Amino acid sequence: MKSWFFSSSSCVGLFILSVLVLFDFPVSLGNPDELNTYNTCSKEFSCGNITGVTYPFRGGDRPLGCGLNDLQLHCQDDGDGIAAATIEIKGVQYSVLSLNKDAQTLRLARHDYLKGLCSPLLANTTLDSELFDYGAGDYQYITFVYGCPSPLEESLIPYQISCSEAGNPLTGIGYFLAGSQPQGPGECNVSVSFPVLSDLETLLREGMSLFQIIEGAIGEGFEVRLKVNSKACWECLESKGACGYDLVLNQTTCYCKDQTQPSSRTCRASPTDEGPSSPESFLPILLKHNQQNHYTS
Image: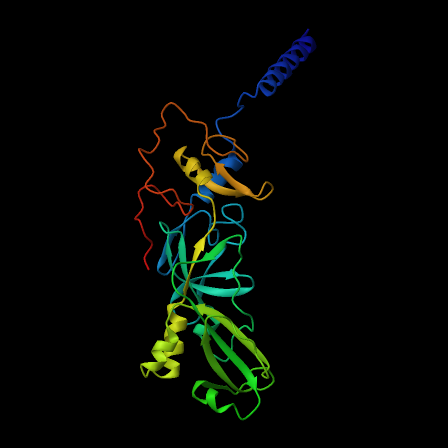
């Protein structure tokens, strides 16, 4: 009799569990993994003057899955005690000078050239065309040419730079040029080009020294605009979710606080939920509905 009772109880339990699974009833109030992902992807990236950054970026306390793989921010201290945000694009590291969520723009500067003209990564600036466009403005290209035969042409002497590091293609003399397009090395060993916003030719005519012009142009950086669709993330935030990125489907996903919604666009509404009154902005760099309109520049 005792054996029959426990056997019957087990069968009833299995039957009930089968019904729950068949009709997709929740077996718990929340999935622990989903809740952890929601909490993790609700965190913000902050470093130096760049603060409160969330989707579509990852980095810091925001791991892979909280943002796009190629939009990873780092917090770096070059030994001067000042933390600065950086991002790598096509193998080149850039300092993030500012980030404007409303305009979907970042102002970037070549991190290697901020430290000097003779120790750069020997690669031109190339944007990932799936993620970025150049921002508004009239851009010029600054080109550094290294390892040139001596002497330089007379017309290039005013733009001469010199690097004395032995054993690399920077050794010897070089020069600096500005123009509407990148320029190649010619008879020299290597050239590096990247865009700047400054009107370099005007500055030269105004009598500024070459190195003042170079330092100012590099420090001012250049602007890029994100090309990430914002609609899915806004819908997720509107449903009280946290935006993330589905690495399998390669699309925005929504992590929910108390529901299991893998690869979902929104969270299921509960009777106590109250959505936001109106969107302040329809953009992908959505932080929190009550944040300021701009990051600190």
